[in-house]
Length: 386
Image (cartoon, rainbow, N blue to C red; front, side, top):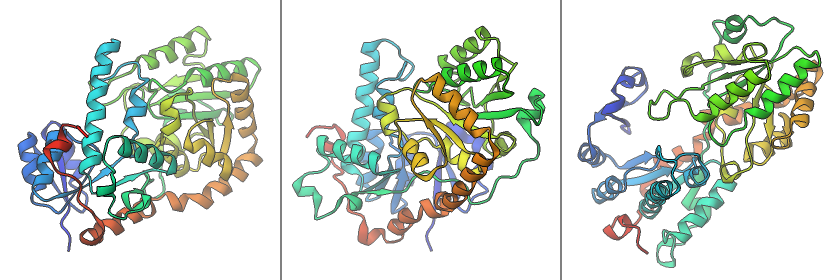
């Protein structure tokens, strides 16, 4: 029987009581030495990227790494307003170089990788080739799927249950109000302005449409509320809809409470601008749309937009197109449309449950001694040189 340990930074010790409810042991570490020591007690480490020194020292203990690459961070960071808290271009480049180095080391040392879809997998295969992580001498007869598997973020297996209709109760909305929910943060690459403008115009035309944002302030104080949140609020204020059709939930909604905010809505919206991030993003918030049986209004360009269009799970509109966003909202105000889309959501939901999305990963871990090929745990890999 396998032993699973969840390693938690001492800085996140407040999370330990909550995390300890799972079928695993929770242990905290204070520094890299403690984490490396913990790694040495295990056969496989599953993680997103780590400090390159920790990766290299951990690999030297004989542990094999599986890295989760669902977040294409280089594509996300390159166009961000700030990187590592810096806004100066030269400083941003310096931090960005550190990000690239971190992934070079992970790709050269990792035994196996997972990501969310074929678009992301192609991105990371290209990165692995460019960084020297894949060479004729290290390919060892493997195919693409043997190197990077698909194990996307999923949704919890149990269905949502709400104790209250938080958005309608807190903002005094009526049953006749068509409520759109923005289920997550408003990060740099998102476009909150277009849905706000669309709702403002629709309300001016007499449509009882409302839009509510939650997740506006990240619980990590180093991230907090990005400037895009204040821009969205300022626009709503200028258009005369702040707290009169467009609402913001201050702070962060705990994961265990989010059903209270989702189930009272009629549809969910996610809008972004064209960018590198858009091309390679996997928007985990969309899984909450499916979990809550909500039809989606999304902008084109990312992987989920194609999936939602192909499976008829909502409406896909052009980026930064207020008229198209208005038309999409109006389309989903019709009950017959929502019923049709709801049937299609029901048809795909089971495939997105964690028990299904993690199946390929579980298979690899259960057969790790046969399937996992160690990477190059060397000082050469750690310094990123070819």
